[in-house]
Length: 134
Image (cartoon, rainbow, N blue to C red; front, side, top):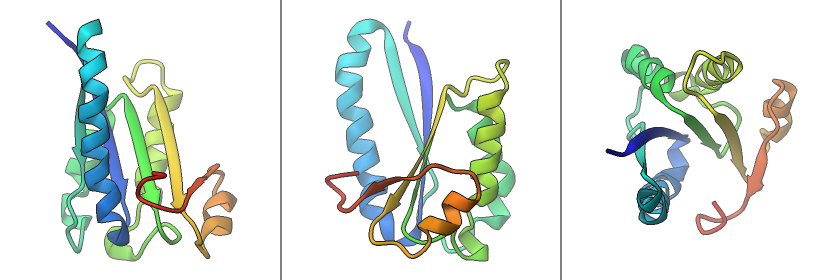
């Protein structure tokens, strides 16, 4: 039986290519991980206009994940797809040893006018410029 590790990836509107690349990357990682008895399970938020009606399910999924990746193309996003709270929830779970969360990463597509806003929120963004660099 495999030890399963859920990986949540949330992306801004403009980063649908990166969300799809996430699935490819997890699949490639599983080729090696499965030999070691580990299976990464990808979880993502589809490119829906308004995630607010699904916020409870989003937070439920974050709570069950071992890894949380947030890729932004602008500051936290518009009200309909704002990821600041999700990121804060993931960070809270990361600080709680009773939770499965092992790591949280924030990636920001460059150039982005919102990097300073994100960094001001206490996050340390990792810049990337292309889907391949993601």
